[in-house]
Image (tube, rainbow, N blue to C red; front, top):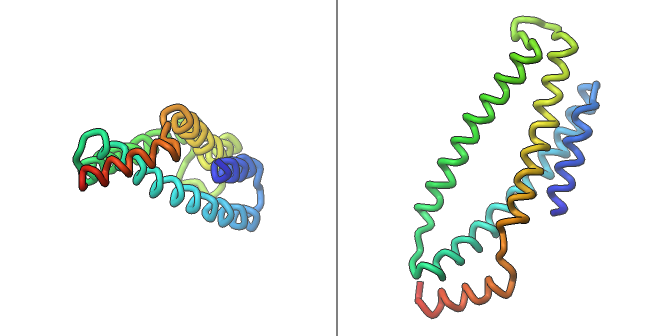
Length: 150
C-alpha cells in the first residue's frame, strides 16, 4: 500500500515537470519505487495465491498459472500500445517534428502520468477487493499443503 502511494504521488508530479533534469530525477525515483512495488507485490502474492490454489485443489500447477499470467502481461502490452496510439492521434503528436504542439505535449504528459496513475488505481482497487488472503488463512493453506505432501 505504501508502494502504491509512493508510485502514485510521483506519477502526479510527472504531469507538471517541464525540466529534463527534474524528469530524470523523478524518473529515477519512480523506477526505484516501481521496482520495489512490483517485487514485493508479485512474489509474495503469487506464492500465497499458488498456495491457496494448491490447498484447495490438492495439486500444484504453478506453470499453468504462470502461463496465464504471461498471457495477460503480453495482452497488456498490446493494450498499452493501443492507448499510446489513440492518445497520440487525438493530441496530434507527429514523430517527424522536432518541436511538438502544446496539445501533443499534454498528450505525452498524460501518457507518462495520468494513464499509469489510472492503471495503478484500478489495480489497487482490484487487489483490495479480490485479494482476501489473510495471515491466518495462509497458515491454514500451508498446513493443508503439508498434510497433502505437495
